[in-house]
Length: 129
Image 1: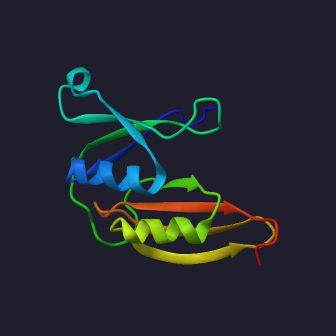
Image 2: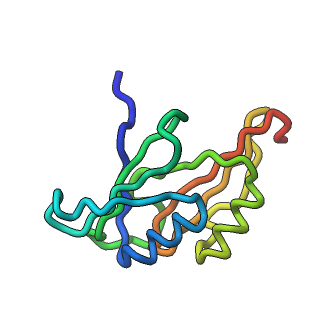
Image 3: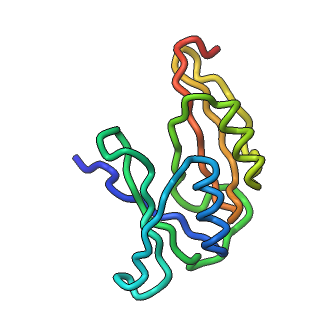
């Protein structure tokens, strides 16, 4: 069985994307450009003792289709859906699919970041209905 161990987010404007994810989720970065031979930022998403994975932020390699998803979607666990949604919009993100209840489990929704990438947020809540 294989588990995800790394993710990559493509961006047209790396500095804008770094700022967006730092402002919304508190992510930090290391410059790995010398290793990869092109602009590439290692992403640290949180405390290494907690569940989750780290990844990378790289220059976009293709064209964003503008319709539907054209790649895997990264979903972040959050403690407060509504507060996080407000932070996303304040940082320049947009709602892609509104908040929905996953009954008895969680609140889930999808957004577009400042680079047009889709991502999700997920707040566990046994009372979601």
